[in-house]
Length: 286
Figure 1 (cartoon, rainbow, N blue to C red):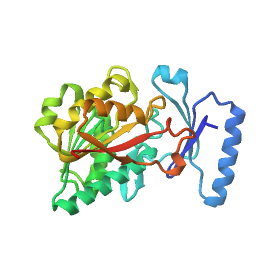
Figure 2: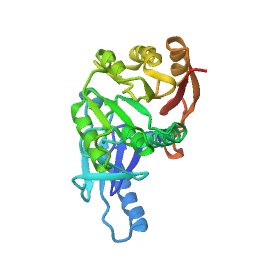
Figure 3: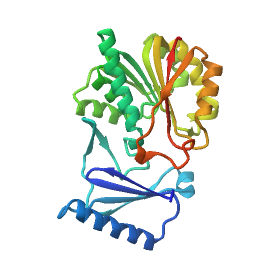
């Protein structure tokens, strides 16, 4: 059902339960994992972590995480499409890399490469709610000239800087620990941008509430985008669907046209398409 997710952060599996899990259930899952791993990697130790999420954990703003078997490497670095990222699977519920955003990162890398081929120079990119800056790594690997990464969480940006160093991309990105909504002046002075990426939390009290704050962000896009610039807008609130993005963007930035939706990998698709992760590209100008 929808209670369980199993994510692979090699060499570690992360099992998450979104409802209370009984010990017997966990033992059964553990036995199944052991059996499957013995087939996939005979003689290799199984490393897995269990994370309990739910209302009690959400109210406390944390997730309970337990190492169930094996070990977790320190530092723990994973590879995706030739890029390396540092992750922390035992710390909190955000592990440093959102695996379901892999296609979004691929889109950004491909877009940056196409821009470079068409214009003969790299794109200028603005990465809002940058977290650990994986989009920035993808853009620079695609040939972007410069990326401005903005996030209020200094620790996440520090991991982002480390991710750039891991990929030998230091020097072409900036990292600003700012509140976006009080920094539009500085953001605009460094523009205009050929690509703006926004991947905000769907609901984070005090920093971003999608229903109120996404329209405020959209209103700024036309002034920050270069002619024919693109915006990649992400929405991970299950209760808000694509219509939310279309409706508010039409109201706040009518000069932007819809280019297309970036589909998630099949393994991450939600039973209900409207509740899953939504990533969509828009373009300035006709």
